[in-house]
Length: 343
Ligand code: CP
Image 1 (tube, rainbow, N blue to C red):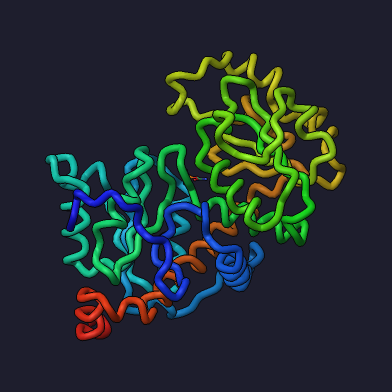
Image 2 (cartoon, rainbow, N blue to C red; image 1 turned 90 degrees about the horizontal axis):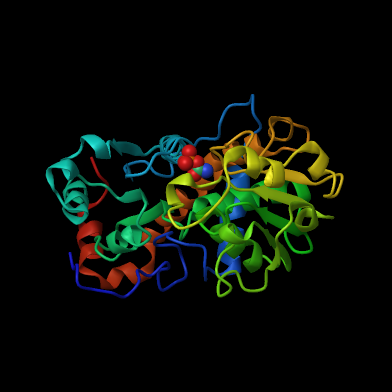
């Protein structure tokens, strides 16, 4: 492993297939569309059996989350299992990281145990990229969320949910509301929406929670909730990120809800058929009222359900990419081919 390299890990193999998924920024539209089509193939209504395949038979997927998670971690693990993979769920708080082992030594150890795909969540934005730059050629790294930088599978599942309800992304008015400044969800959603042709993407936030002007190019900015969601097709609420708020001055929960909470009355400013989204976990009574979160316009549970389908599509894509001709030039790839299927 080379800890000195500073080039970003390549997202794609030379043939354009997916190697690592660390951000949606810069990914080709055709690749996003292929992943979404495949995710739709794996998507099932609640109350019906989940989709299954053996596309990952013989593959081992490890999840390493140093930040809390319910949805992302569980849905990655279910996705891997439903594709026939072995899953190692590393309890980072019980791992040898606590004895001072470096992240790269942990990764090297797991590579020795035949892990093929790492799913990482970390508060540090550059950890998934560091790992991706240092794994063997046959190994892929998927971000499960990194700092405020990216949460790419969340961006894909948000996009899939909109497609299922609206049939398109281009031509929609999409409001991203709340703590945009600290949100990796907002950044990944924006990258996906812009790549797929959305031109009316609105950031709606109090000044302290609005990102820098240099970010989110092309998005309109609003400092009043009703103005920002007026006539919108999609209202994407964000969680107030208390854990990333060292520098942002915001009022208390009651004051925030009074001005920024999405209530049925405020939602009336959006289109009557607007959908309401939230990545969760939700702060009910702070950024969103329970009547809206659980109301008829909410698609929040669809977002969760789509998490497994999207992660199945991504896992399938990176494993399919291992047969990429680009790998044939690498020593690790040659080793991998000689080794053959795992026992
Ligand atoms: N949306 C999301 O990332 O949820 P978790 O933090 O529970 O994974």
